[in-house]
Structures are given as C-alpha cells and as structure tokens.
Picture (tube, rainbow, N blue to C red):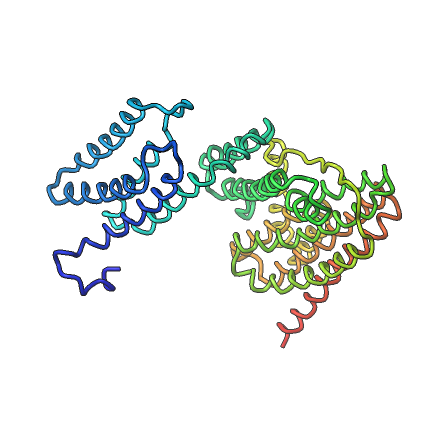
Length: 427
C-alpha cells in the first residue's frame, strides 16, 4: 500500500488508514442501521472507527498509550448510558450493539498499527455474525445436548489435551511421537465432526445422495453397517441402502485427498490422479445405480455415534500408534513388502490409520512416494472388500450384489488410474 500511495504528500501519508477504518465502520454500521432496536447505526459506527484511528494516532505521536484505553472506555460508556436512558420496549439490553461498537473502535486501532488485512477480515466476520443472527439462533435452538457435547469434547481434544502432549519421538525407530499421534486423532475427529454437523444441519430426509455423501464423511463403516441392517429389515429399502453405501465409500477417496493435502502436500500431486480416477469411475457407477435402482421412499435415520467421544478418539489413537509402529518395524525389516502387508490387514477395518502412518513415514524420509501411493491403494481396496463382505453378511445377497458392484467400480477406477500413473512414471 505504501508504494502504491507514494504520490501522496507527506502530511497525508496517514490518510489511507483513515479511509480503511471508515470503510470498516460503514460496513458494520450498514448492518446495524437495518436493525430498528440498535441505537448505533451507519454514522455512529463510521465515526467510532475513525475515533479508533485518531486516538491511536495521537497516542503514538504523544507517546501516551493510555489514551487508547480511555477512548475504548468512553465508547462503551456512551452506548451503555444510551441504553440505560432509553431501554427498548422488548427489554433488549443492547449488548450486541455495544460489543460491536467497541470492536469497531478496536479495529480502528489495528488499522493504525498497519494490521489492515486482519482488521478488514475481522470487520467482515463481525458483520456476518451480526447479519446472520436469525440463522445462528435457529441453529442453536436446534442443537441437542448431544450436539453441544460433541463440540465441547472436540474443544477438549484439540485445545486442552493437544497442547499438553509432549512433542518428542519415542520407541523403536523414533516412530512414536505423542503430539503427532494426538494431532492425527484431532484431525480425524474434526473431519467426522464436520460431517456430523453437516448431517444435522441439512437433516437426514434430503435424499439418499446427500445422506450417502455426508454419512461417508462421518464414517463410511457406520453408514454401511446401518443401511445394511435397514435393507435386511425391509427389502423395499434395498435401492436406497445401495446408493447410500456406495456414495459413502466413494467419499472415502475425498477424505484421503484432504488428509494428504493437509499432512503431506508433496504426496498429493502423485496421489490425486489415482483418487480422481476412482472418484470418476466410481461416480459413474453411482449415477448409473441411482437411475437404475431409482431409490424412493422415506429415508430411515442414520445411526451415528458421537465422533468426538473420548473412547473413540483414544481407540483411534492406539490403532494409529500400533499401525505406525508396525509399519516402521516391518518396513525396516522386510522393506516395502512388510508395509504392504500392514496396509492389507489394517485397511480391512480402517483406511485412515495406515494412510496417516504412511504419510508420517514419508515426512520422516523413511518411505518413498511410490510406496506411499501403493500403500494407500492397497488399504483402500482392502477396505472396499471388507465393506462388501459386511453388506453380504448383514444385508443379504441382493444388497451385496448391487453394493459390491458399486464399490467395485470405485476399486476399478483406483486400479486403472494407479496402473496408468505407474506406466507414466516408468517412462
């Protein structure tokens, strides 16, 4: 910004900061102007943002930093006095407007200290919070005790336990790092919680396609198990169950891509074409299934456990640590063949643990990128085979025939794209 405005006279060098603060105040004030209960609108917010910049300007020039705190207190006291003198008929204390105005003043302070991008982002975020009050209130009213418990448990896992875990390598081969293990737990639980929240927001009656996609984001195994039981109990549910199961397992590939992008971006360029092949061919199979089976009728409730439950998190953490240790040991003893055996066995029940383990070994320079791709493909194919068997033993032959065909297209896409990529790498 300074280079772009170098043409300004020296005495107006501070003008751009005042302009930015004015824009932030106008944006926040525009939303408050629409609220008849608010005692501060467009002009008040704009003037308050300018006051924040001006007070900080004076405090910096005079080396009297206490002026900033005095200005903030005056802004808050002014608004509180306004609401005390003329309370709203509905009993609205006006705390939201007071807080927003004090925030607006503080953003003006940030602007003067050249934190312009941060101030603008916070101003936009604050305006969105003010504007979407009905939606936020509706979400909070629809939250159950279980939903709130999930959010609180995830906060404990990520914000209390994670910072306390030691960030050191332990065990054979230095493969066990408690901080890294718990970070993987937080990541997987966070993905599951995001899917669970989306499932709660859109509801479970929005169609088999939506239920399959979101169910796969939470847990493809739980989705396969739940709808296999529904198909067994009611044969009319078979078409719906097939679509939900196939789509849930298709989403597994998307999960793997996201995990790779977050944990090992260097792997993503090699893994992404393989995953895209599985998604494209598996998606075509799913589309064919939707038109061929034509799922209809009311969807049953998808029974999902709490993705943030401490027992579940600890279970995944222990599984991940065990797979990581076995992978490091067998990779050192038998080379990549031992790791492929671990991928085949662990992938039967959970593809996330072996994927995270191989990405961890790659980051430690203990596993080449080609072996990482092979491990993920083997684990995913084993997982698809396990889900097909699950559909057979729980849902019956008719469900298994269609579900296995759908998941088979996913596996076929993976194998074809993997073979093509290996052919290119051999050139």
